[in-house]
Image 1: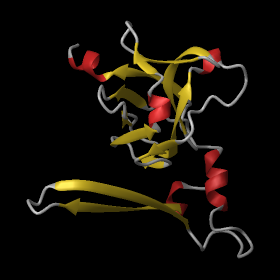
Image 2 (image 1 turned 60 degrees about the vertical axis):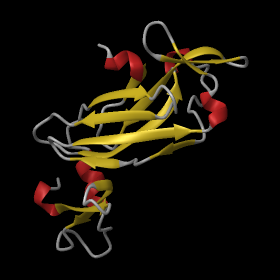
Image 3 (image 1 turned 90 degrees about the vertical axis):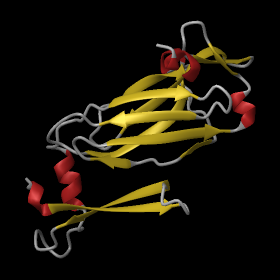
Image 4 (image 1 turned 90 degrees about the horizontal axis):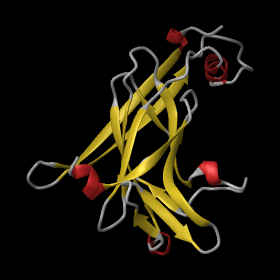
Length: 185
């Protein structure tokens, strides 16, 4: 059974500043390294991560998403409120309501993410911006209940949602709110 001290996380953060010294963009990269002194030389240096996955508790993240009224870009905020376990390789996917799925792939493709497969330490928060093609966005509408809906002739009407899961992250699916309605509540 691997021990926590045998797995190291290195985090590199880069901040881009404008001429007024304001941060205009930042990026974060996480790197995992297992202790090379543990195990045989034939063992992968990342083998401990696979074994460790079996003993890590699942992480529940708090996620909220809203679509901008004009651009229809989606902004999600993710908070890791648990105290002890990191959330590894947290992944976002733009999807049609999975409860209405006919078993086919319900992802909205192509979709572009400001970041994906992110690691969240306890207490971390992060933002993910999701964008897709204008052709896709033309089928979106703000429904009376305050969430984004998608209507297409081929597939009927669905809620637009964001699916979040990860290496040790509990899978959840989040409705996408209409930004102008969220701002008034």
